[in-house]
Amino acid sequence: MSSANPPPASPPVRRLPLAGVLRGGRPSEIWFKPALSVVASIAPPNLTLLALGRLDLAMYTMAGALCALYAHNRPYAARAVTLVWVVLGMLGGLAVALVAASLTGSAVVLVTVGALLAAAQKVLCDATRVGPPGNVVLTFVSSASLFAPQTLAQVPGHLALAAVTGAWAWLVCMAPALVRPHGPERRATAGALKAAAAYADAFATGEDHARARAAGYAAVQAAWQSLLSTGAPSRTRRALERLVVRAEVALAAPAESDAGRLRAWARALRGTGPVPQAGLPRAAADELLGVDAARSLWTRLGPLTPLAVRTALGCALAGYASLALGIGRPYWALVTAASLYQANIALTWSRAVQRVVGNVVGVLVFAAVAPLAHLDQAVLVLCCLAFSFGAEVLISRNYWLGSVCVTPMALLITEFAGFQEPGELMTERVVDTVVGALVGFVAAVAVTNRRAGDRVERALTTADRAREHAARLLAEPDPGAAALESARRGLAVALVDLRATADAAAGEWWQRALPQERVVLAEQSGHRTLAATARRQGLLPDRGTGTETEDARP
Figure 1 (cartoon, rainbow, N blue to C red):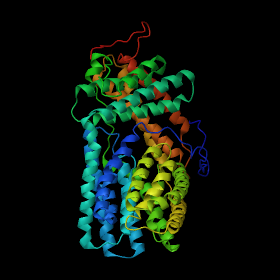
Figure 2 (tube, rainbow, N blue to C red; figure 1 turned 30 degrees about the vertical axis):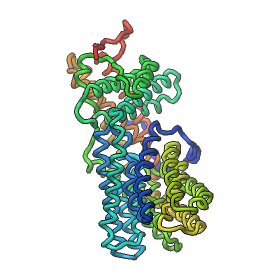
Figure 3 (cartoon, helix red, strand yellow; figure 1 turned 60 degrees about the vertical axis):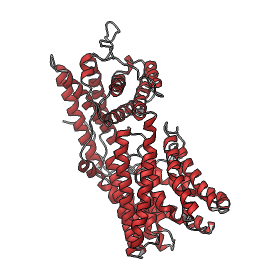
Figure 4 (cartoon, rainbow, N blue to C red; figure 1 turned 180 degrees about the vertical axis):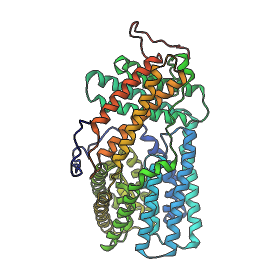
């Protein structure tokens, strides 16, 4: 008979966070890559249009050039494929928008098309895990194009401009492979090592080590996914795999790990020097299977249904509200709503606050820059390039800081076809931002995600089964190196998924109480089993001798 407390009679309402929403964090380690790439992708086509006196076509060259913001954390083999799909996705959304703009002048119909496009872009970006900036850039381009004067005869030429600049963006993003072909995998592996070292330190001091452990396993899984997407195995990849195994082992048994050694390995991965050789038992070295946690696209689409409905409804209502207020650019409200939707209500609320604050400050920045930008179209182009660089410098610190640069850049882009009255632009931008944030958040609250609790239950079941499978193998006299390694990796993935699912569900409103105690117990027992499995594999120091039973040969 269960001793657990019965669930409350009514679903709990969780408080929305305020503390820390605007606090800046540490910048991304590769912030300079998207920042430099987007400038290198935008500058040549826009300066060419400026020289030809056709800056009014910059909207279409910008569409392709902005694809340079994507996939900088992926190995080059995977990046090449991902960027092709990003460019095709950008062209697809742009094509739908331009054709719709050519066929109808009804603002209501255009807003509806924009909302449906935004929902499709959001779901596909999340399901394919394309990474930042996600759907927001795609939605910005397609929504703005809906309200650009257009005829069917012009559509092929405009799409061609976007395709050419998209190809140029692909080349820009792939160019670093000539200098540092294994750079992304090395960074991902270094990130796993540093996260494992941080957990070892936190475990020793008792300072929030559960959170550090979750971050460590997430970094390890990201490293495996990076390595598994590099194509055919190579000597460098095998050496990196051994280092990721070392990070996994440190997470399984932090008390017996050397944080300094892990950090030294991470430092050695900088630059293009040789990859440190971390010895492993011969059996484990032969069975580096990685973590293939990929699921079918259809399986990943299912849980995103509430998010798709929120996006479609929120964007449509935001656009309609903007039209009702007589604003001439309802796509600003639509894009604001589209930018809000995150994994749960709490994160959506945080993004809404960040978006409003960033846009309002950005409008003030535009007010200061507009007189300078209006001196000449060349200055206008240079200002846009500066803001595109600044946005990528700041956005990884906090979304609102990036918006401070994105907002004036978006306002300046509207002036490529001709200078406009700054006061009117600023007023419309602020009103549309507030309307989009309010209406978009209300839509998120209205569309509940009651299945979040069910997903926690399923994640618990998966983690329990993975732990039981590993425990059964441990009880066998000779479980086999491959089977034991596969069980350890499967359990690690299940625990990462359990923590991510529980965190996402904890930020939702109006749902039954979550089994937090069961989640904690499952994590504790799972990590004990991981440590026992690693010890059985000979990946941990022997308790009697303090030495590792390993073959240290490279």
